[in-house]
Image (cartoon, rainbow, N blue to C red):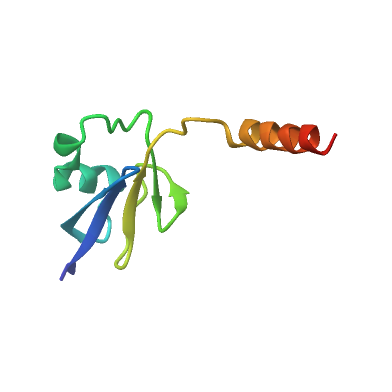
Length: 98
């Protein structure tokens, strides 16, 4: 017998988050559950070719087979390169000291 369970599909924006509970079973992929959740209709900017996904902050591929207890997170593209931001901050701190 195949066990059916619920898990959340989450898409966070800067000022809010959409969380949708979906029924799943082991062997379902993230791609299948994102489609089943209908979250792309609410947020058409989600694109499997561009957005990365993860399980509890650990990045995985769209074809990852979920397990009971997982939470699917859809990540937005980065606006700025974190390395560049740190570099700029370090340069500003250096200028202030001079």
